[in-house]
Image (cartoon, rainbow over all chains, first blue to last red; front, side, top):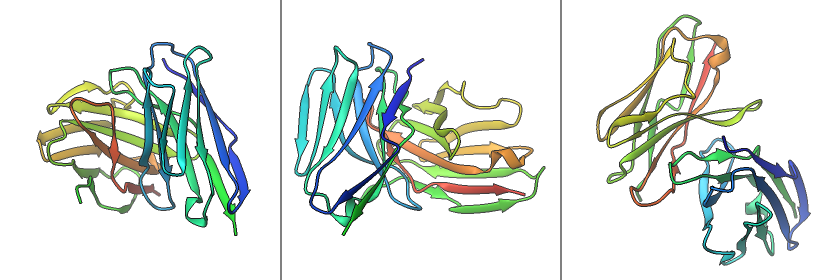
Amino acid sequence: GENVEQHPSTLSVQEGDSAVIKCTYSDSASNYFPWYKQELGKGPQLIIDIRSNVGEKKDQRIAVTLNKTAKHFSLHITETQPEDSAVYFCAASINDYKLSFGAGTTVTVRA
Amino acid sequence: DARVTQTPRDKVTEMGQEVTMRCQPILGHNTVFWYRQTMKQGLELLAYFRNRAPLDDSGMPKDRFSAEMPDATLATLKIQPSEPRDSAVYFCASGLPSRNEAFFGQGTRLTVV
């Protein structure tokens, strides 16, 4: 099955700086790559996703890039704010709806 | 604001007792997932349904876990008998038929003592 690895496991950044989280996947057939944000006591919330026919996607301060050849994708958060502090998960799936999640990255934004 | 609703939010039970968790998917979503989250294993897919039919429950311990969708507005996950190792947060998620997106509920935190 699909194996998704996520790095780093923890990330501390100064408010206003950028944060980058990287993920790799094993199955070249995977074609959907969502990113989820999970705040304490809440369920994961979809924040952005990218499909294999697109190399980059941006939504305000959040961007995701995909390199299919290398089988890796990344989340970029610019101008970080305290409310960006959370656990972020990457995931990958083929068309069968099975999301395989990375282990998560705990992001702390220091004021 | 459409959302996935899960009940109960928290459940503490004694080992051996039956536990039932409920989920109301977003109206119009015909795919429902059950995930379990633990510190050790992260987010694991237990089962998923499409149009109320189970498509894959290979992630679920068959001897004690069961998942059903009595109707399009209700999904249930049952554990009988419960064990301390079942302690985790259980999430339900639902998705749109034409896309791979999954929208998660708030979860049920289960503690088996």
